[in-house]
Length: 153
Length: 283
Image (tube, rainbow over all chains, first blue to last red; front, side):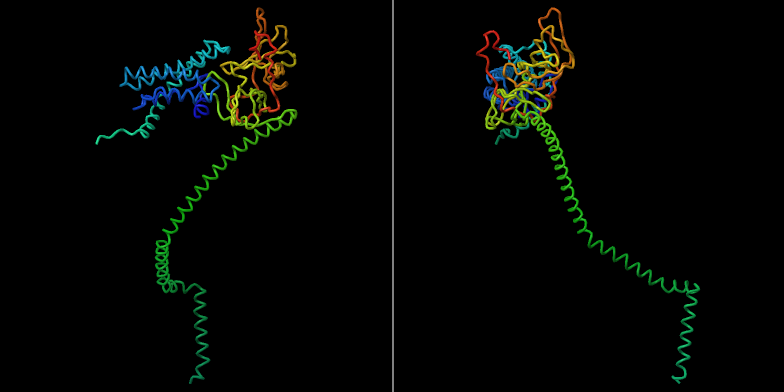
């Protein structure tokens, strides 16, 4: 809802931040979040696909690839969550928007690749990277409230 | 003895009183009066000051508490009034909008309208769609044209029970058949990912100029005719091209859509079975 009403209206050229992707990545980076990579991707795809004109499968592919990238990063550099965050957001945004672009191209929508990259994809990635850290901090606080640390007795 | 001294005594007293009065009126008694009254005045002042001090001491805590309570009440009242003012201002804006839309609807009595509020936008940046708060429960069907008081907005692309998704004419896959006035030339309005709209398929010999009006033509059966779309802002004509192109300034500000009207008595025609295979994607 926030994405549809508030974040979607904050635009850099014609690109906008993807709050759903950011929350999904930030949650997956929390303690215990790495157990829910795929359910998160599927849930995010369902939510956005229901609101958007874009088919659910296309949105799911974009988010699923983002989760896959994050899973690979976490399995190799699990001690640097911020690095994983920025790389996953960068690659996830790129893949997610590129999948959208490819789908629209396939169904015959007249899109110019250069204009699409300069006006939508690149500004979208920049906006996502700009708000990735605040979203990560906010999701971290919520995660702490919902999943408190285990106490040794 | 008493009867002899009575009148004289009275006269003497009267004379003394008159004398004292005369002295007092003459100002000769002031210093004596001050000397006599001063202790009384001082005592009175002393008692009064202490009385007021004790009275304030006893009464003030209640007054201060009362003042605090009253202050809190007034602040709450101010807060409520400010909220009310904001709500009323919002209502004024909505009423102004609805009045404009009502004028628009009255000017076109042949159409039936259903007003709807814009409650969201498509979250994917490549798409130009808005979500409205009216759906199939309100008689909204796929393909119905959506307008505002200014002009054409788009058409309903998908419907649920309580909401619908509207494709704006700025969407890259949107195409609208239009008529350019005063040349009366047919063309197609095409959206783009930059939210700009432009005119395509204008015959090379058509005399079009910046400032010309663009209205829906009704061709293709997707939109009713004579709805204002925009005004030509620039024309691009190349000698080697088959058609002219023109940039279009839409009459609607698509970034500030709040309330829209859906034309509910217009059913779009599906003419795709009549078209040859190669042109089925056209509007």
